Image 1 (cartoon, rainbow, N blue to C red):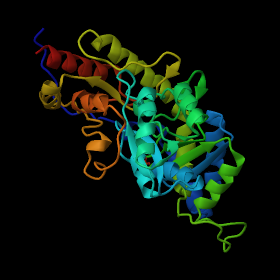
Image 2 (spheres, rainbow, N blue to C red):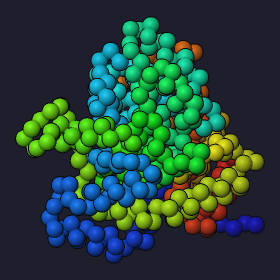
Image 3 (cartoon, protein in one colour):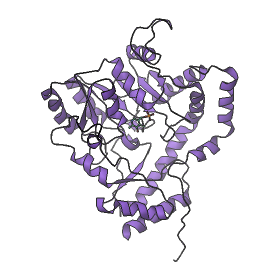
Length: 382
Ligand SMILES: *Cc1c(COP(=O)(O)O)cnc(C)c1O
């Protein structure tokens, strides 16, 4: 076997492959918007909301301008602000903690579980007295469904109920995933997701959505996204923002949602194949019993001293990797002064130096999967 190793580059996430598959339907959908010219909150926005709610089983889907706004607006709606503590995992994209700081509350950083990389309920329990000792009022928790896998929503709900915390599920990476047979979008008081193009369900620009079963909350969120308007446009009843989802993006999203179930199946098959081929040589991701993942990332662990070399070896063979996340939130200069759970955040710190994600998207074909697998095996064996 002295086959030559291929070194031409493959994409980490192939947005263009999906674009080729969709082809004309996207052009036609955008052309319809260009014909009717209702660019702000046009009919596609309302149609997309109905489709999204039906897809996940939530009573309300409220689209908005980004995944960040989808987390920010529920905090605003609940009146979370100065003096309040909002608990978020430290091992996440820092937008999760950012929204707490934006409303003037204090993000309190919590550790994650070794197996799922998601919020550790035991660490959350240890974080609550830390917040109280600092004179903060525990108000909300934002668990993250990291890399496409649901957090332990039952355990988090039990703590939230006992402590009267409002739960906002950050499903930016995991819309479409299920927990105990139910789709995300139906856990906690509200769920936020993102349609950033690289997320499992992306559009062709920024966008997001909030899901809730609470009628009153839904009405406040719909008001908040248009500057806090009341019954009419020139009646302002609360401080809001411009948080609208664009009509052109809604038209794109409607078409993408139609093929999303099929893409989720494709992603799961690729993840299964990676795991079967790599489990003997690498620490492969584990999906908790009773959950399904949409595989926003396929993330393995490599001993910390070897990660850079491993990435460089793959890169030389045209295989990109990514590190989500090299710095947990509590070590970022903008967040260093915020409180952390009692006992510190050792798992988040360890994951930050060990994790590395392999190429993952629904259009990664068999030969490319083989190339990734062979390259990873060679790099880890060498
Ligand atoms: C992407 C992401 C966000 C923010 O979404 P945007 O649409 O980029 O604003 C929030 N939380 C997590 C976990 C994310 O991955």
